[in-house]
Image 1 (cartoon, rainbow over the protein chains, first blue to last red):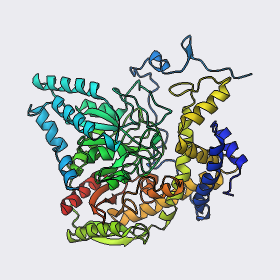
Image 2: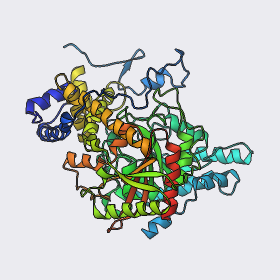
Image 3: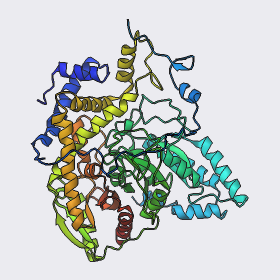
Image 4: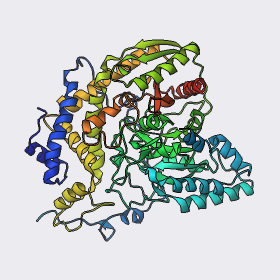
Length: 97
Length: 482
């Protein structure tokens, strides 16, 4: 592994919804391969008996009361940021052609 | 360097400035004008994306009016500051130095901004950064490069390069940065100011553009440890809007003093190898000698898994980046490609055009390490090696009070030197990422210069939640070197 093909790059870009130019595809093919080759050193580490860490300060399931906070930001304030709205909703392009 | 120090020295301590505002010796309006004046005169360094002049003047005038009326104005009354442009706040756009967020006017402010404002601090500008905080030199900003105040041919470090440069250039007494893997400590070391990365969870991340949620922390950059500790004391503590926040130290963080006498200090062997530039090594060794003379029990200590930290970091962080940046889809706010025929094309083009090179690079690495078939070998394995590194630090901290070493193997590098090789740029973080993976506090304190008169930062680390002791010992070291 760690030598990505053009198709590998296109697949990743597709999964991440990134349209790439031809130049970018070639540049990323080599750069991502180099980076992956470097980070693969983790695969040789002995981790027998160890569990993965996802949270470093030991917090689990931080709960709060299920109450609405008045945060001072209205629905309209947020919708004003959107490229297109209709009837108080975000409007997006058609999904099925 | 002499003239620079003099320029930065024009600001008194944060505590003194606030005291002078409270007693009417100086007005908040005068301080804002002074900060804006310096900002205007140092434009060529590329430290600032935009000023928040109008709002700053209004806030300063209202603070001055409160002083006149005898009303309380807070511990940071009238103190001007600069925020990295990934902090959501009023008065200017919040762009994260990205084309994706260009034009974004935040509808609310970050928790820490609210806390600083409640104590009377006045933001005067937004600082440049690597776009979305992805970088070690501020060259990845979609807008401009921040130049090092000591040498304009060199970088200021990153990603909080604009914040670090603004403090060193004397624009403000303090600036806010954010840390995911060294983004405060590295520019602090490269520019010669104090930069802090607190225990994970001690500062609320609410309202700051997310990079990697399991390591992101926020803190100030300042000229002195005392200034830093006071500002940090205002910022730190639990926030119901960030479920990862932890309780603050009951003694707070301001005016911390810790004597080195009798303290056990470990010099990290893996950070003092031949790979470290001689000028850096000498400055660090000189600081260590002074710590010994002050009564510290200094010994070499090895954390063998540190050699894996950067690899772990560049798996876990891009994974979290790819997830956090998925929100920028061109449909809800800011950059949106116009003219797409369907939703899929709108996603592909909005993200393909809106994100810069480094953001796309990290999103794709993250996508790869999380994808079916590779998840266990990369992401899960990295998380497990993270445990191994954490265990080594835990062991060492049962024996040692503090760990020390350089912040980076070199001083500030030349603009463009690492720009064409992303992996080489990533290596600039090699000595900073461990503190973020482990969640321990770490600080960069200026301890000297190399043969080119470029600043060298000493890194000091302590166990989780020992922030007060760490700030105290940093102050002692600062005094030893004065």
